[in-house]
Length: 123
Image 1 (cartoon, helix red, strand yellow):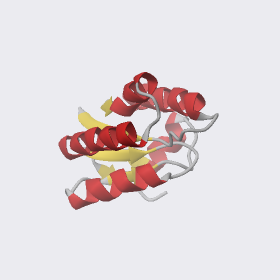
Image 2 (spheres, one colour):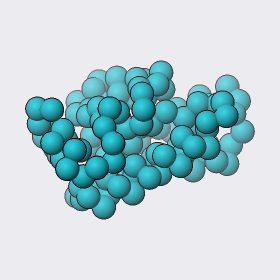
Image 3 (cartoon, helix red, strand yellow):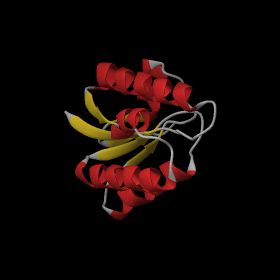
């Protein structure tokens, strides 16, 4: 089973809770349909920590440490945020594959055409 860091937009605006819920749905979807173990610590941390520059930086440091330990990074959600870009660059720097599924819906067949853990398919 591959261990995949899941990156999804979070933000600090009114859509923050919806983003957390959407990210959790993506984690469950990928684990169910693609035999991966998702890592997304930021879903829990962002629910417990207030949104301050200090805690945001601490959260990103936690995220980057986990990215280094995962097999690959998967970008999900409606867009690639600045934080996701930082995570993706960090993954590439450490030789981890990065998969961009941001334009896809949570449909197993659609996702399977674009991504299989450990390999890239044309899509």
